[in-house]
View 1 (cartoon, rainbow, N blue to C red):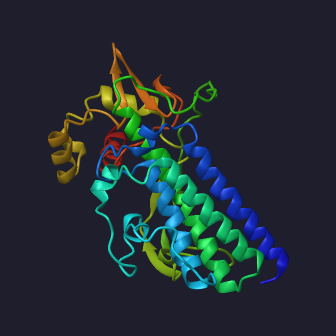
View 2: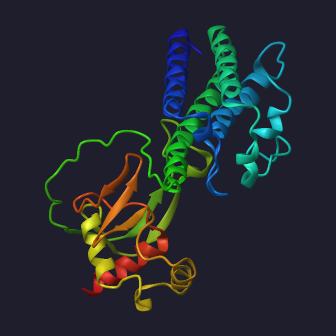
View 3: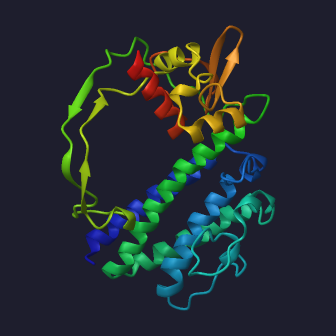
Length: 299
């Protein structure tokens, strides 16, 4: 691998890792420790697991004289890589109070120094590909950190904000139009020429029935009309499994919507904010999206 490409990869590595560290910077030790539900993970675990990836798949097979930072981390911060060995149970990640956040940050710094040294000596394309895969993997976990933090903070009755609210664009959403797509035989999947995950390959053909696609995302205001029309109380809009889910869970609006007097608030990473009628609706399930589409089609 030529020196310029190696230097660019090292720059990308530093940038991605710094972004993850910055996402965790506003958090207390307690914030980074708690697991709010079995499908979420503590921020501390995300910080350690993404580091485990580089230690396990890049350093262990390719660093001269490799020694693990801590032998127990191999199991503790493995997720679902069965070929690597045992994993600590996912629902119990929030119980791992040790190592502490400071030690996990030290783990990150140690592995970063070792990866930088490895790249500095030059690496073959196969190792560079592993580093690139690790960076895309870490960017996925950056999204998960924010998703899991949102759920965690939503469980706190103080409704704390993770970060200040961004300025709202204001105004109203444009008219909702429809784009007709003929369907037919199409190709999907990675076409080559850049990074892709293995589940994006091989490129293959699929037959699509004709369909219509909205010209923009559905807004919170448009979804509110579905809520106000009794959409969550009317079984005819829902798939059978979806209606069972609505009744079993007592669902009456999208996740993170909360009643506030006669109106609604939406809990966000900036805390609870008034519903923004022009903003895209978010945190809806497949069941909800399907029900909304059936309701909208009947209007």
